[in-house]
View 1 (spheres, helix red, strand yellow):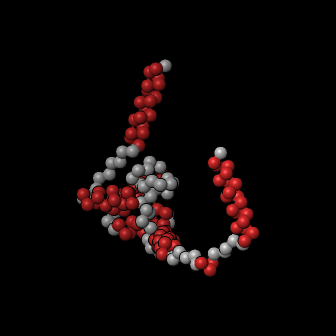
View 2 (view 1 turned 30 degrees about the horizontal axis):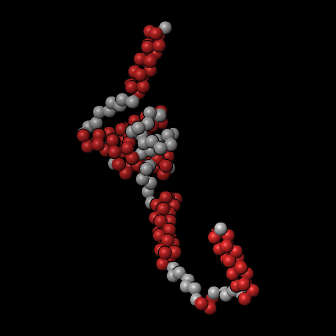
View 3 (view 1 turned 90 degrees about the horizontal axis):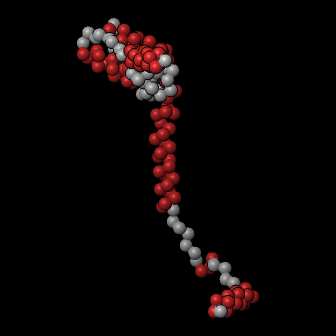
Amino acid sequence: MKKTILAVLFLGVMTSASASIEIYEFKTPEDETRYRALIEELRCPKCQNQNLAGSDAPIALDLKQKTYEMINDGRSDTEIRDYMFERYGDFISYKPPVRPSTWILWFFPPLLLILLIVGWLLKVRKPRQKIEKDDVQLLTAHEETKLSEILTAHDRKNER
């Protein structure tokens, strides 16, 4: 029983370890550097927040293979990015291009920050309203008498 469990665990570890190893041979070290930079920049379409380099999803493996093939075919980084954008949309990149469909991503956060700072400055700089003597409502004679009685009763209570 123990041997069976150990064998299954060993096979599981070996399978997962071999799945993440990529063996690509590049013509030049620059091509390999470009490949690494592109798979770090491009997002896996299946995984929510993972780049191609960190994903073992089947589609990520296919996209890494396609990126490798396109680099070996002599395509530029721009051509590879355009290919990916054409098929997977702006979601494929952590750095989407500036165009009308992505304006909200690029301009809303700074605009919101500016509006919040302006609002805060206006609130802080707003002059506080001074109270004038004319604005204060004085007590009537009856209210003053009632207040005196209450205060006197309170003082007597505290003296005991």
